Amino acid sequence: MKKTTLALIASLPLMVAPLVQAVSVSTSPVGFINITINGTDNGGLTAISVPMLPEVLYSGVIADVTVDVDGSTITDNAATWANDDYAVGDPNGNAAYYAEITNHTDATKVGTILEITASSGSAKSLTFDMVDATGFEGASYSIRKYKTLADVFGSDNSAGLFSAGSTKDADVIYKVGGGTWQRYFYQDAPAFLGGNGWRIAGDTRTDMSGVVISPDEGLLIRRRQSSDISITLPGSIKVNDSRTTITKGFNLIALSFPVERTLDQLGLDSLRSGGSTSDADVVYMISDTGQFDRYFLQEAPAFLGGNGWRKAGDTRTDQSGLIIPPGTSVIVKRTLDDAIDWAVAKPF
Image (cartoon, rainbow, N blue to C red; front, top):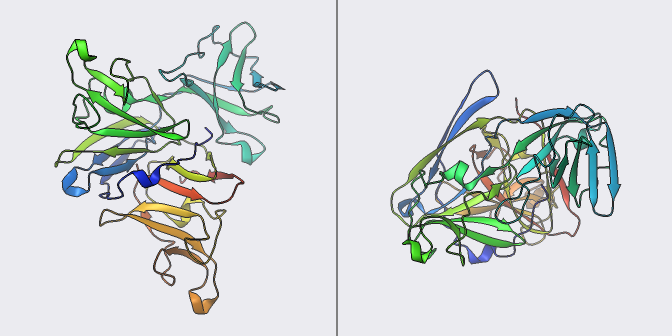
């Protein structure tokens, strides 16, 4: 999925408490991750990712690609799906199913996520709007259904987020859509005011439980109660490299694998380096004290601290070994117009 830039990071509070997670993975590529959502006693704002994937619905090989001004269509001669099996949208009109490239002779294509906008059983084809799939012939791919708010937090809010009549009082899930923050919450209201269920701020009646969450998309959760809650996310584990696009501005991005990583292992070395956060791309991370700390790739002579990952305000301490827990999302501020194709090799 091509990530959408964020324009409103300054409007969100930056007090965040650290996550506490545990990962259990069996010999088959399935498992679960436990994620703690922090209450106000621990900052009240938590950045999470959803690295546990839904089951694979179909796997195949791309035989042919047709590209036009509207997007691309691939053909799989062995396809078994019926017409419109995957031509489904979520409440916001976004694709509910996606194909991911899992193997290709061109490694730069592995991990690409293609949102399915049409599927034809008779033509054995899938269509992706506004996507150039040139050169994808011969690639292996898998089809999955995106996870949704209901999948992650429960259709009846079994996760235990605080419900209320509006985002003023309820716990809020911040998600990015169309370049702006979208605010979701579990509404607790009588039927004449919209009833109970997942809603988006400004619309008390439309069921939003089916809103999709991409595997490379981060979420921010604002909890208004003092106590922490914990959610368990089961699912499959990605077994191929991960890939997403980082564009100019603020990008809320997920860590695609449910394992601990270091800052150096994230594969963000192609970010713009500089002498300080004022002229370099910046990675916002959650510290143990509940703050969004800022990290950047410093480029400086030795007497000014040398080259490498540094924390804002400390030009000399090497931060490449900073531990990033699984289930975390990060914010990357890109300063240049050109986008970065961010690829992360599978860590196992």
